[in-house]
Length: 250
Ligand code: G3P
Ligand code: MG
Image (cartoon, rainbow, N blue to C red; front, side, top):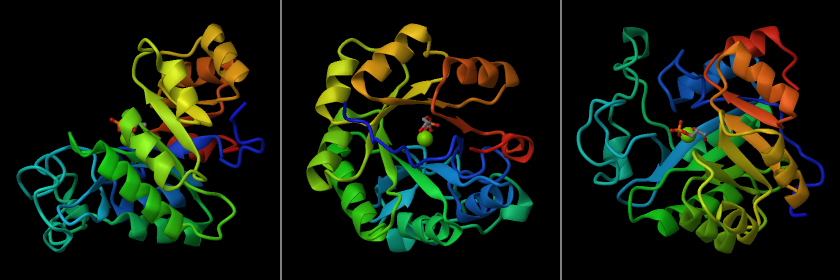
């Protein structure tokens, strides 16, 4: 088995910082998620034109910033000037895009864990996997709980594995595509992170036999949470901040 023998991560993971209650993937979202009681977060990370790891979900700037065009066309100094909060609410206007370093500092100061989803621009899978893994290694140096690196892109995880093999990796699955177990095994994954409709008893058994933990995204509705808890999944990524307010987070 390749799994971490002692799973160090909490059960509830706040999606993109604070789900939909704050502008996704910004520091104010993480601050809100922490205030809601979360001690683990998921975020999406890609590289600026000059190779700085920063948080953004989409391949383009339009939806969640006042910028335009591909996310990797601008150097960090220009990305840092954009408003990544005004699209969400007037209260959040002026909220900047954060670097991975800014979010690492917040998590470490809060004693919170981080799931870094490596979200490369098309064609940048290996470069992003490698740069994010090296940055994560440096930012979490000497910490007891390392960040969990995940990606839908095996090439990104492979580059992360080569750059910083000691950092735990998880394969993201939106479908159970042919050959995924072999790929997860080759990548030395400690976990799989599945779209929430995928897990059933057979998948749980298969994952357990391989030594993989099973996490799910994005579990928002009570019925889904109940079913996934009954199956025995190891963690849930959620947009709904009330899960932290109303439930035992561990
Ligand atoms: O990392 C889990 C989840 O965030 C994957 O989907 O599109 O929200 O990044 P997405
Ligand atoms: Mg994500």
